[in-house]
Length: 215
Image 1 (cartoon, rainbow, N blue to C red):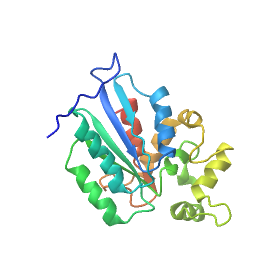
Image 2 (image 1 turned 120 degrees about the vertical axis):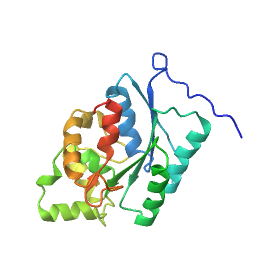
Image 3 (image 1 turned 90 degrees about the vertical axis):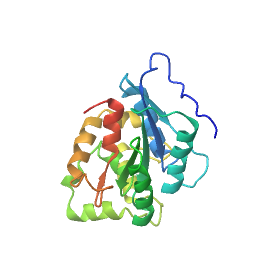
Image 4 (image 1 turned 180 degrees about the vertical axis):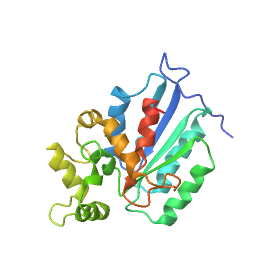
């Protein structure tokens, strides 16, 4: 069996807690967490965002990224590895199998957004709990517009930000209101004991709090 290496932490952060993030999307999540790493990361934390070259975004493949990292490096007791997954495209069976893997290792964290990660971004800009029932239904369905191919959430983000594409947006603008996003996500998470939000909600607030080292 190949010996695992020590992950090289930056000078001054030798004892830092390592947070490793593997996300379903190739761009949207990485843009956000790379920005957060630069401006919002607690000095006692080091964030490593894993990038992927292929288009296989299944929960199993995201788990495979994390598993490969754990096979390559020694993981300390305090380190955290996060799988950032969307609910909308996957069956409960697919999510359940990966959730089970995560429950078997204390370093692993299963972080699901329902319907998708862009809900977390939206919460920086507005409180969806103030939505009408009709808009809540539109958000939950998050259907693609047949003409432009944008989902309901992408369209709403573009309306609020002026410019938004999943591979091109200014995450620094959103980070100014991250505390609001955390509060709003907590309010949506009405059954935190569930393995993932069964209705509109996102667990990304837990990851954000960990990066910022907030209780």
